[in-house]
Length: 144
View (cartoon, rainbow, N blue to C red):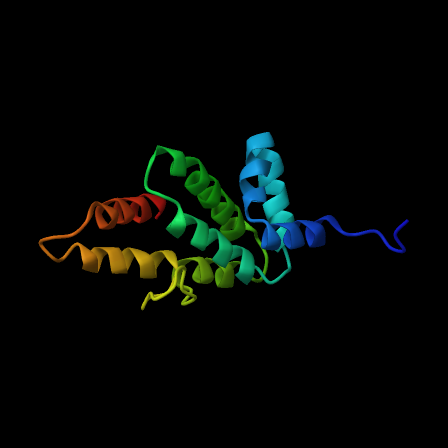
């Protein structure tokens, strides 16, 4: 038996930090359950690692039909994180949009939605750019 009960938010935060795929599993079981667990994981806690893991998931997921589920789940999680009404809401939104933590190795831009979108936009300025740049730009534009 436990000496003291574990609070749901602490447990959800720990689980999501170590297993980001739990976002997808929770949302597959029940969208309201997934939203509740995401909210519990970040409410009145430091959301930086969960936000960064979610942004990494968006960036690393392939731009194909199979990746849509993971990206849609990540976007729903970010929406919940951004919409929690407390004194840290503005900071969470700023972190989602402008974090400088890179989402992949060897990138010279941050992982925030605005930073990545700007990088993809710059990549489209050349006459010859890959489909990855095109689809990445479309993905991030759709998320915003």
